[in-house]
Image (cartoon, rainbow, N blue to C red; front, top):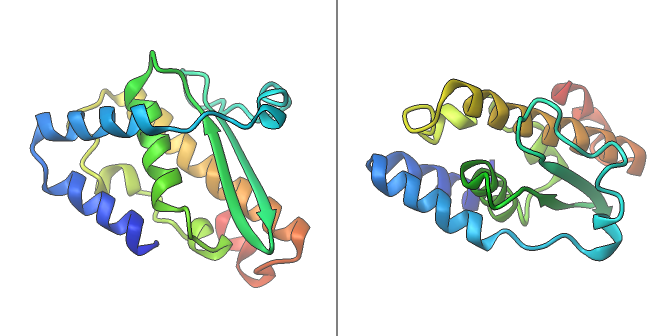
Length: 152
């Protein structure tokens, strides 16, 4: 995990219920729009099927480093906030750091206590999809080949 993501998770964990909700809403408002070239590809297999809300993830390799993009609706602020905090916390991450993120990150962030079971399942789906996409893109780019198997 990156230092930035670790700090975000720690901030969420230390916050009370209302503050956690407010933090998620703050992140939701900060999620950048998809670049137009990716917006056109939203429906080309980039949807996170495990999530009830329409969430789209994109992972690219730029100079052998991951570049992450996502789209989630404002009508689903908790999901959008989680996606935004992942993108912000993983901005400078390596492929290996993304692929080895803990599977219980949603629980570590204390989000189980403020969100329903279906929402938590959807957020976990977002995390797993991100890890799989990072592994796929890293393999295609020939980066971190020795860690690709850990994300599957």
